[in-house]
Length: 209
Image (cartoon, rainbow, N blue to C red; front, side, top):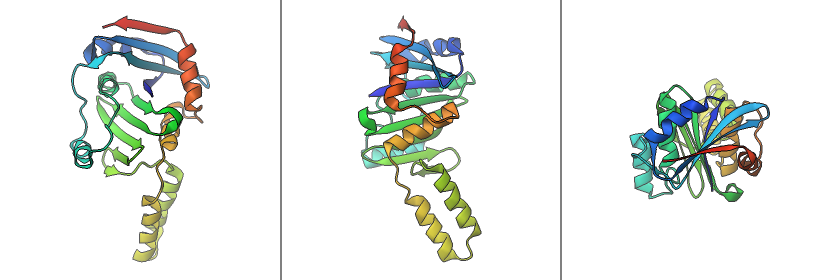
């Protein structure tokens, strides 16, 4: 599984400063890649463990416990690092994608806290700051069109139809990945395997924790 912290820009020192606060033991890895001309900091761990538990919104943690579902993230290292990085003023994306995009998780952080979470795999769930739990909005243009339709509907029945269209959007892992990378890059994203190739070929700094 690919698991990365992704930050747009080249402020590598800020990410480096967070490794010690977020992780213990193991090795912290950091690379700078250019994707379509956009510099992206990529960080990941090799055998590190999180210094603490991530701060998930209570309603999301309760959903996970009630449904006994897949972990909210494969391990705690990247969400904790993302919280620390975001506390320094950067927007951070914690991303996990299984081979073949069988499942994917994208968690966005700002000002030290989670602002958006989308997961698709055996189950699909999302959490949006200010909106709460829902399904991943992986087809934003369709979601936006349905929202406009609901607001302009001439009757409750017509509004309900648009609502069913909106809620019925199928969430798939590839869509979660593409939406997250499109937001990060403000451009069409590379395939996940191609991004992994860029990361593998980039010079990588490593620190023993």
